[in-house]
Amino acid sequence: MSRAPVPADDSCHVKLDRLTKAFGDVVAVDEFSLDIARGEFVTLLGPSGSGKTTTLNMVAGFLEPTQGEIYIDGEPMAFKPPHKRGVGMVFQNYALFPHMTVFDNIAFPLKIRRVPKSEVVDKVKGALELVRLPGHEDRYPHQLSGGQQQRIALARAVVFNPSVLLMDEPLGALDKKLREYMQLEVKHIQESIGITVIYVTHDQSEALTMSERIVVMDHGVVQQVGVPEDLYERPANRFVADFIGETNLLQASVEAVSQAYATANTSKGVRLRIPAATDLSPGRKVYLALRPERIFFAEEEQSGINSQVGVVEETIYLGEVIRYVVVIGEGERLQLKQPNRLGVRRHRAGDQVRIGWKIDDTRVL
Image (cartoon, helix red, strand yellow):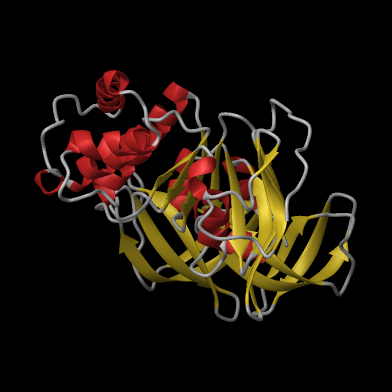
């Protein structure tokens, strides 16, 4: 089946229109729609089985959608072969040819596109300079570190000036420190050449670091799309609040609603003030999301603060922060993070403490 082109819109580079993929009775991706701007870095984020890699493989041309369409620069792509889509691809396992030199690995997509030999050398050298590995042309993949191999894979993906760059868990095989370094390197390279990137990861920290927008997916369904700050500060539902960063999730029932604030009782006997919302009413069941870094130790009750007395159950030293588990009410456990700095009192398991947080720091889901 072919589709007519949609009008070209320079602000919309890639358009996914109700993209669906089913494997028998299992729907892996369910009516995924998204407009991606030219030069934008968009990340598909979710746990295993959420449909993010299936979506990427449909954009790449490795899978045909069950229904829906993919447009790049207004041209329908859903049923075009991968080599006719003008997209580059970087995989987690690098997929470098072990018997080829770095030069030949990077030159490979140029040769299959019949780029004149006179241009190949300059393009390969330019790609190596882009990834900061000039002079590595004669080495073989086994002579490179993991980070260097990933840079070569990136150079090969962009050497032919693709319209879109697709990246599937590209840093997953690297150690933590190198992975964090490469996150910034990939982002800097993307910004320097202005290429549109669709990136797949299950690592929420990686998504927050690199992305202009994040698409949170679960069981093939888009849960929320937004800039990193929106997803972290204003999650749309319980899944997003729990998956993006760390959070305390409390089950509660709304007790009363006023113009300024509402009150709610958690399932374990803690009475709290929460932000008022137009859809809240007495008796309604809600989830309350509270980030650990928003909770602090308090000396006394303060205006505009939820204040609770509890007992420290656990203290975990993490270097830059200390994580505490404090039990309040009838067994309600809250995690809080305290920066590790001089002059800050440390608490031990068994200490009775008062903790607090601003009422507006509670998210009602």
